[in-house]
Length: 232
Image 1: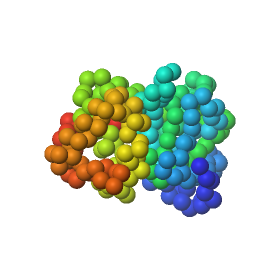
Image 2 (image 1 turned 180 degrees about the vertical axis):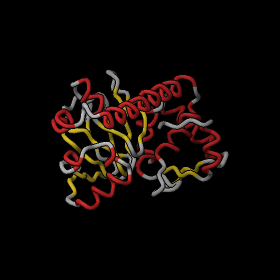
Image 3 (image 1 turned 180 degrees about the horizontal axis):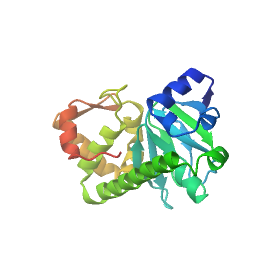
Image 4 (image 1 turned 135 degrees about the vertical axis):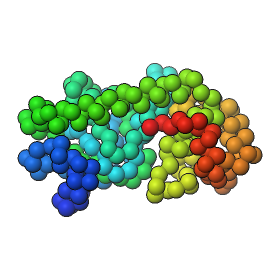
């Protein structure tokens, strides 16, 4: 992440996401704005954080890696989302790896500042509780999706999750064929089975596989195949 020295943009994002009503003026003055780029690793399991970060623009992918080296999606998050909330409360190391799924911005504030000025303020505690409740709900939903639904549903849900307003229905880096082994791990299937599902959706006009990438041809059909599920 790169720190952005732009106070007006910081204030604009605080106001837009109503964080100005959550944090005291003193804390807002000590916040920092950070820019990240798609594909950048924002934190890794086992890291030690000393700041809490608030996603105000873009999308992040949160995943875990099993002892066997298999990756599993926990969820995708859009604004507003928090990195480092559980680590702050539990005082432990980072639980999940977080990767940027698009370009975007984070607002950071130190744990020390939160402990000194915010953790006993009702507005902050209520805000944190709402965010964490939603986080646990989406984790439960993702677990159910990986266990109960077919690979076709999981793939469609993943494609919907990595889409963004900036990209529309066009997918590049994350859906290059060279990344399919990683994707198979992420949604809990084999590379061979995933290829069969991709071929089926291609033949049915939902997606198109060409030039080493996969494109979404029919977003409404893709939504139908996801059966209302999404990794968010």
